[in-house]
Figure 1 (cartoon, one colour):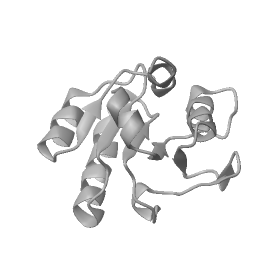
Figure 2 (cartoon, helix red, strand yellow):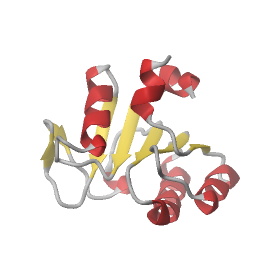
Figure 3 (spheres, helix red, strand yellow):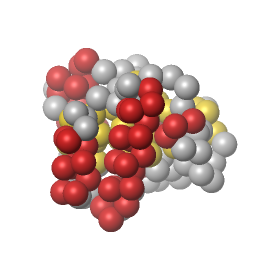
Figure 4 (cartoon, helix red, strand yellow):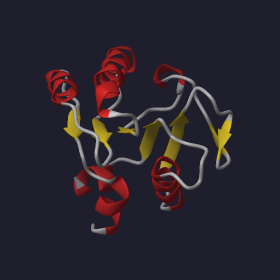
Length: 131
């Protein structure tokens, strides 16, 4: 896991929250402060923590290395389907990371079938500080 965080710097965050009290805000903002490029995906916000927000994964013009997911487990498969579609169109997304408490084996199988590494039920913040 730590290899990914050392190698990749562009992280799209699916479900990033504007609410500073939620982990879906604090974790990506922490990663941003560590020098990572964060691209929030949220259909209801324009700006989160000074970062431009995108409505959909495909809307992000920059290369994405990691897709960090803060959505319920039952929505993970649809998110991975979007990621696979983007990978076929743009050739990016090396890793899909489902945050702590989020797991979906169908989503994992789809990601791996499309040569996208997959981590689930792990907190990116915790993994980073333990590197």
